[in-house]
Length: 187
Image (cartoon, rainbow, N blue to C red; front, side, top):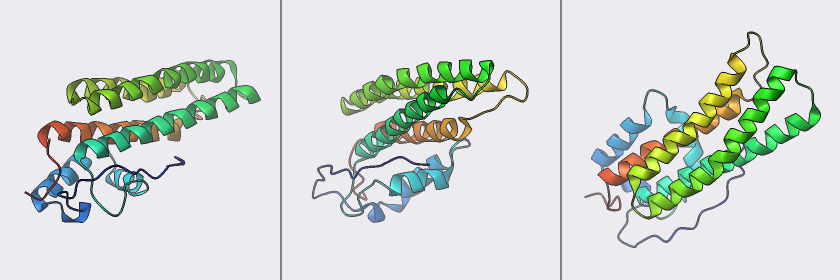
């Protein structure tokens, strides 16, 4: 998984504790959420460890925004990959048609994810979750297109899986925002 992640510098209140000091109860709930049936805990952990600051702490909302930005980066990279694949013209008619469909799906997802960040910033977790769920469908629909024809090449399996997982991470975290509106202060 290549995300070309950047370092995020979010303002951190002095009252917030480092991520390592999250109360065990809240930490256990977060871990339980990350063990969701579709969500790989190791994928979740490794994706967020790449970009979450090691010093200071984040609110659940800020962590959700980072997860959405990771999904947006992934979708953007997938669009670029699909464009390159289509330029090479090495796929058969069915696979080329599927790639064009996937290009449209992923291109449409990028503004949807931006809107979900805006919804989360405006404390509208319900709308953010609906948008994230809709974005996740792009990966599923894209993959389903290739699977319609027996023995068809499936060049986007990893891209679709990574995008789905990143959206699922964002969905889990934004679901926690409404349950944990305050910073994780260990209380």
